[in-house]
Length: 69
Image: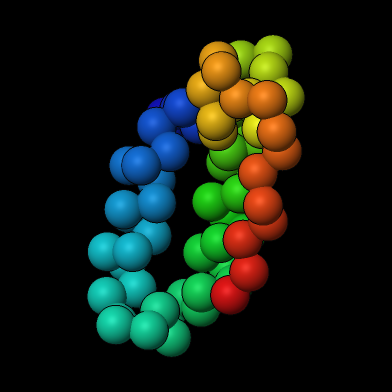
């Protein structure tokens, strides 16, 4: 039993709660971001959508700007 990749906000919140530090020093911000992006890619693949369309919705016409930390 697990959590569906489409539950992005829930998965992100679980990681934030697990870390519980203001600067994400326990799990690490890069690790949290990497897992979050992997979940988004998995959900997009499952929905048979390109990642930018999955993130931006049906009216997305441009690729999102990469997130850096």
